[in-house]
Length: 253
Image 1 (spheres, rainbow, N blue to C red):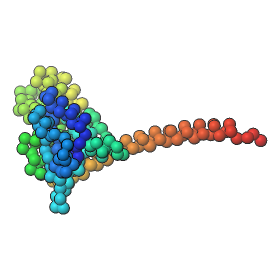
Image 2: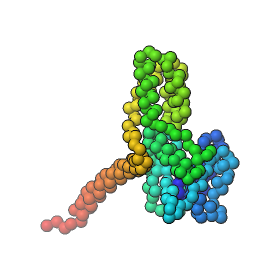
Image 3: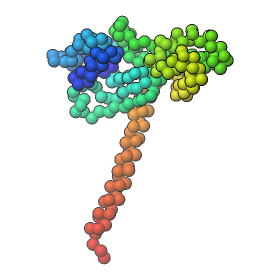
């Protein structure tokens, strides 16, 4: 989901992936930039099996979609100020990549789905909701059933887990459960639960959006802190070299 998408190189890659059978869904603004003469042929992506949502450009009464994020395989998020546009290649932009973060990715997938619903673009473009908190609780029940030796009660839980397995990267857990490898399943479940962070359930619809923005800002802050440390190290090295060079140039008394 990006506001402006005019980068033909990225678009060609998405078309190649869609042609190869990868599920590709994009959402962009239906404005003069994305629909200008010579703009990307989004119909080409649709014809290759991809899904394209053209969102209203916004008005005084409706907010404009200004997102720039991408979710890959349900566990990687790319976000930042960078639009997928030719102009962005020349701008000062930032990009943050969060890997192995299924909970974080699930929130972005939900944001994608919610915006399509709000703008009446859901339909075939809808992204299945991956309820990470409900999945966490169900996995805890599955773990407890295995520990109690009550595996006969697992099938109804497996049905629920299959619907979100791909979105939340549960394939190793599902494979172990379906093969009856319960020791391996327990280890995978424990690893998943350790990596999960609790999600606060609240009726205020602004809270999930603000939590999403907060996590993105925290990732950006971490990136900037690392850049600051690198600059400080470079400054120390420069000062030492400067002092050494200047010391050789000064006249001796």
